[in-house]
Amino acid sequence: MRAAAAWLYFAGVRVQDLRRTPVPELQRLYVDECRDLPGGGLTALKSDPRAGARAIAERIERRNHKAQAEGRRLSRLCAFELPLWEQGITLVGGCDEVGMAPLAGPVIAAAVILPPGTRIKGVNDSKLLTPEERDALEPEIRACALAVGIGRAEVEEIDTVNIYRAGLLALKRAVLALIPQPQHLLIDARKLDGLSMPQQPIIKGDAKSITIGAASIVAKVHRDRLMAQLDGEYPGYGFADHKGYPTPEHLDALERLGACVLHRRSFAPVAKKLGLIPEQQELFATPKKRAGEAR
Image: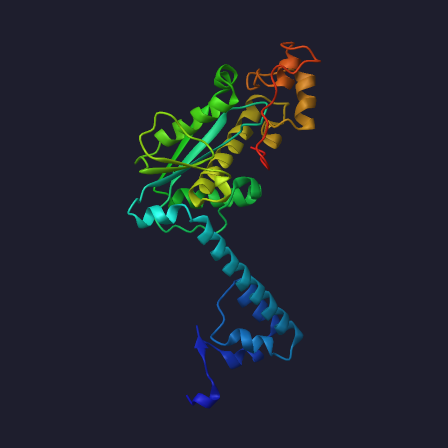
């Protein structure tokens, strides 16, 4: 081949062939199937006389920029793990809990240990993801993880020790369920008693640490599935839809049906319905959410 001809091949496709490829075929190959362009292919498409080909080049360029931005975000998300990995601490655990605000159901916590250098595209604070995104990421996290632990605090424990301490119980149980145990633990703005490994509380850690973010996704998916299952055992409350949160639909069901065994008696709307506190008093308030939280 002569250099002047600028023949470049990639997977059997020449750059100059792109201009002879119908636009729908370009769409299928490089947009729908996300195949890589041959070297120089993006430049060729951007200068193609066909408007459809140039539009495809713009979409590919936006996709590339998005991928680069995600790579930078994931690098920032490993800012707490990376120094530990570089010190040879390979078993870095992250843990988080969900289900602090609902009126019904247990608190669920998850703990995760990821292999050093792990990058899982899309991992973030579970509250910032759609249910579909969480459901897609959860099996990927489990497949990648060195260990995953689940802990829970039951409704009776929530009503006995209070919701904050119940959250700590669930977190500790999740960490103790890890095999192997972590050498270092990253945790979302908490500290757990009775654990031997060093702990590093991180404010809003589920959005700053890949291991805490991964744990938050595993915990959220686990609890959502559990509440959907419990919806079949306690019909009428809509647990599969609102997961026990104090939505208008849930409060209406609580008013119509009364409380079931899944309801937290120490939370004001439930206590009022059961006559445990007068309507005008708020002796047992629902927990205040942390800034931006809907756990």
